[in-house]
Image (cartoon, rainbow, N blue to C red; front, side):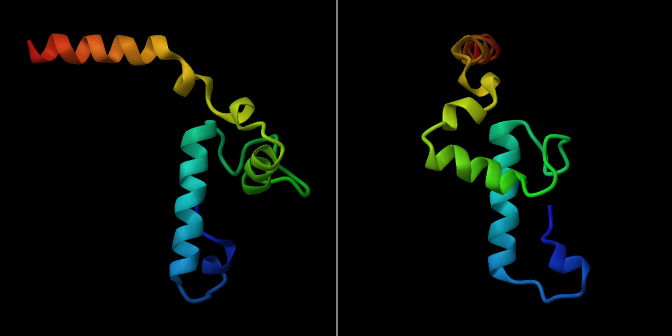
Length: 84
């Protein structure tokens, strides 16, 4: 996701790139996109994640597939099979 300023002809900046990279990381960690239906009005992906961080609720917004150890174990077993 690019900052809206880029579309308005503003200069590309390192700060904007870092912000965009952070949004991509949030998308991967939460399985949500900035255009998700839950976001609108004053709520966006950045504020959603920041609120969870400030209220010690990060585990509630992380994509559960990232926390499912059985998936990791299954992938490790597949990797070992491929290497054998």
